[in-house]
Length: 343
Image (cartoon, rainbow, N blue to C red; front, side, top):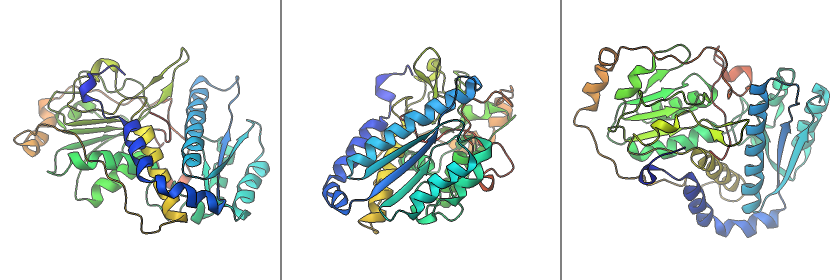
């Protein structure tokens, strides 16, 4: 992502700060002898290109989880299952992790093939720190929680907020967090006109559609743009939801890579420490960055539809970054955005 250096919010710096904050927990955690199990299904060279890209993003995410869990004193089992794994074999891998008292965390990397999705619900709820199951103690996934932590210091004077990909798995979690704090975001998804994002003070995009947010959607008044897209490219590198040509426009933006992915990891390590060592551990907080307010964001939001009438729609097909989630999380819609990468 090309952007002015002074408008980038470094997720990597946030993650480093969180690890420094929790450094004292590493030795007690290691003494416990606990483990995290991360289960991932490989793609094949014969799979569709978009599925291969999503599988590659899953690999990157898993590798980052391995590194970050190890840093807080957890051993990690990274189980890479072949594309032809049977439902019985997949279910057995989850059951072994459920039954092992040393395993404290189980994460199934998304996407998984359709024939395997139902078995994700078999994860023991007390070991599900990423809200993959209905019974999880966590209300939202770590990506959504991380996005909220970044957004929070920019949202204190109730600005206009737009969430692009609001009906997706991550998007639903983001909307839930915003609503809990009295914020009413503009919800945008499949087939919606994206013109209104131009008048938002905060834009959150979780679609995994490379370059969807272009210069025509962003304005210098926007105090924050959160890009949670992460799509590995065939020629190398990765793409986010925000076009590189637009990244320098808003006052603050999370880059890809190095933005929301590391923040997600910071949430996961917090949850693991809280689960095993300190149930009352206070959430880490991001202090934010300077921004300039507009005089009347609410009034501007009310006129957004007529002020920007041209239609720019989310594509209905060809979404390369939509992870597969259990049916209870879909809400009748295909879920957008991906979770868990060093974005």
